[in-house]
Image (tube, rainbow, N blue to C red; front, side, top):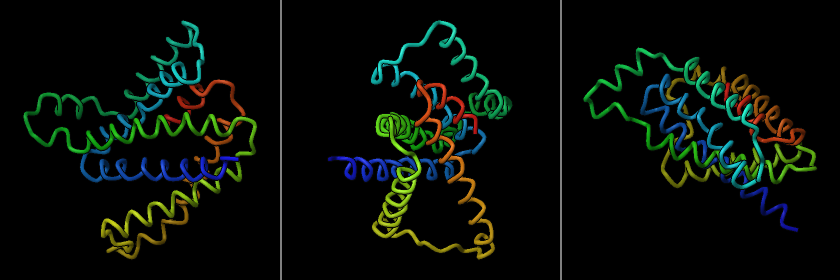
Length: 193
C-alpha cells in the first residue's frame, strides 16, 4: 500500500539530516560538533520509550547514561570544551543550531526506519533510501545554487572509499534495526562511530 511513499519519505528525511549536519561541520569545530551529533542516541532512547513503548530496566537506563557519557568523553577533547565554555566569543556556538536540527531530524528518522524495517529485508530498503536521499541532495544543490564540483580534484580519489564506508556503516545499522528487539541498543552502538 503506502510502502513506496514511506520509502520516499525516509529517503528525503535522510537527506534532510545530512544538510544541517554538514553545514554544522563546516561552521564549527568537529571535535565539538560530532559528539553533539552522537547524542542522537540519547534522543532516540527517549523517543523509543515514548513512541515505540519500549521499556528500559533501571540497569539499561544506567547503561545508557554510561554509554552516552563515554561517547562524550571519548570524542571530545575536555580542554577544547573548557575553552569554549570560558570563551566570550560569539563563535563558540558556530554550527550548534544546525547540529541540533540534525540530531532531532536523525532521531525521528531512525524511529521511522525502525518502524518500517520491522519484518522486512533491509537490503532493498537501504538501496531505495540511498537513491532517494542522493536525488534529494542533488535537488537541494540545484535549488540552493551549490556547485557539485570540487575545487581540488584530488578529492575524487577518496570518494569511492568514503562511499563504501558510508554504505557499509548504514548497512550495518539497517541490519541491526531489522534484527534487534530494542532500537535503543542498536542506536547507542551506532552512535559510537
